[in-house]
Image 1 (tube, one colour):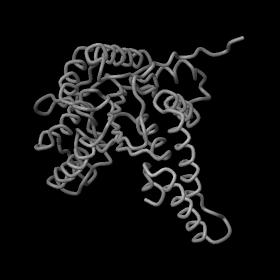
Image 2: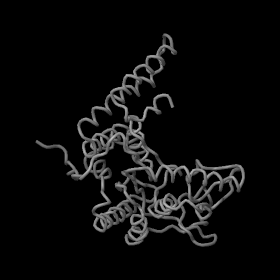
Image 3: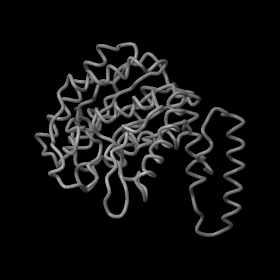
Image 4: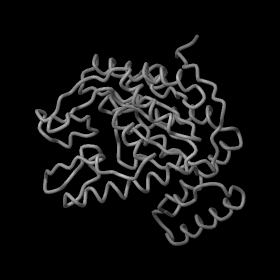
Length: 316
């Protein structure tokens, strides 16, 4: 008897390796996968502007990675709780003065652009097709409302072709990179469950169009379908019934490995993860410094066998 439906995984015409540089943007789910990659020895850059959900904001910041010369329009400064924030970035990016928020975003963008230019693959996770337009000025779509009054924004659902148009422009300018789209399985329950399903449908159909337009460049990894269809039970979610639990993240990670890594890469990743977990262990008894030295010696031996891995996360 069969007790589970299985998602048919796509066949990808490439593999990712440890020497590849991977750039992640998008929802908190992209951070989950990028963290797993980091813990298994891969070189990753993850969400330099923080967690972002809507495709328009992600596209506009991707444009800044391609053309980082002018970041003034990448910042909409707002003041609350004695600090300055930007409506185009996550709230973890803040400063004590208005001028400093521009400087902070500029520094982050220049470093991110450098990482992006040297990357081999871009992983983009869309979270929601609902957007908020800031009513003060240009009615511009923002990435984060920064706890401003709800009357400051107009909420609406993006059209499929809006997403396709803005991302088509980006993709045309991205050279020499594989672009892997995913959709976050996190339910945006505050929008309403019916509305959340409508939002995810818009994202799915927009990505389908992009894959048809750019079949050699763009690919889709079905993280959303794996969690929603294979892991249907609420025991696979956190207590909020919205965010996938760690066991679900690990399940998706296994699927990711099967799709994008060959056997030797997986073996290297497993060995590195053992080293990573050992380095993070804190002995309750005994010599902590001795344990650290043992981890260091293990790392040096691992470096001899597997030189093309990101060892900076061990003692970074």
